[in-house]
Length: 189
Picture 1 (cartoon, rainbow, N blue to C red):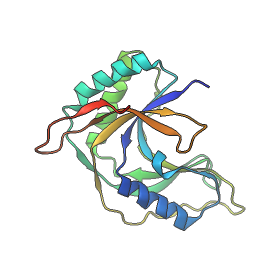
Picture 2 (picture 1 turned 180 degrees about the horizontal axis):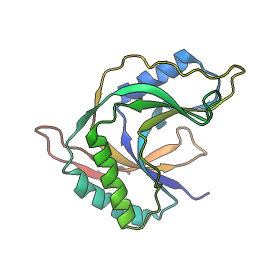
Picture 3 (picture 1 turned 45 degrees about the vertical axis):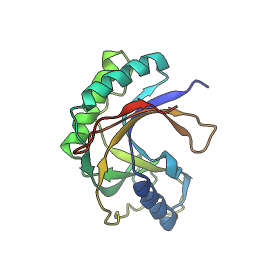
């Protein structure tokens, strides 16, 4: 099977752990829980685009993200896609700060410039945590615990391999500039 790729915000390990701990605590009957190391916030799904074209996109994204400093993001709610009583996707939503939408716009623009076929649906920032409700009772949307905000500091290109766990492998990343810090970019493998 040909690999698929996507650009996403890399979540800090402590945030991934908080999400995973909450999913374990909840113990909801979903067919599949997302592996803790696979939590991310997708900016653009590039599908089966050629890696050489994606590498060009990474260069364009490097240039564009150099203007966006690290910014705070807060996880504020749970949500679902699909039928409310039997969702196909369970996710964690954000406070949707303006820099997040600016970042997604720049990543999408870079992909489109290189004719990478990306989704045209409106951007709905979320972190998928589980798939396919299998409960006997209708699903009831819970409230998210009060979690601290964190800084978005890294964007990555991931490759999907459905035969491994975790199934996403970082192929490239760039870090956003923190106050007093130089930019650092580059391939991860």
